[in-house]
Amino acid sequence: QVQLVESGGGLVQPGGSLRLSCAASGSIFSIYAMGWYRQAPGKQRELVAARTLGSSTNYADSVKGRFTISRDNSKNTVYLQMNSLKPEDTAVYYCNTDPPYWVWGQGTQVTVSS
Image 1: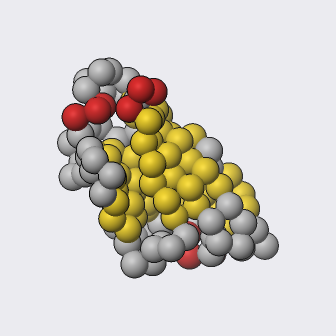
Image 2: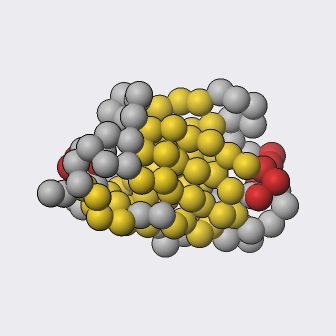
C-alpha cells in the first residue's frame, strides 16, 4: 500500500505564500495523475489542483492563478505552491491520486490569518 506524507503547512498572514510537499512511498507514483485536496471545518473534501502524467494541470476556480501544482517523479513527490493566500484557503491539505485511490495521509494544516 502506498503511504502519503504531506508537509509544509503552517500559519501565514493573508497575502503570504506556502509550499506544500507530498511524498509517496513505492515506485508506482509515476503512473498516476496526482492531485491536492483540502478540507475545511464543516465542509467536504475538495480537489483544488491536479496534474496529469504529462504537463496538463487543472485548478479549482477558487485557487486558479494563485496555486501551482508540480511533481517530481524521480522523488515520488508532488508540490503545491500557494501564493496570495486568503483566509478562505484555511484547511487541511491532502494529496492523493486523481481520482483518489490510495489511503489518505494525515494531511497538513494551512491556516491563513492575521
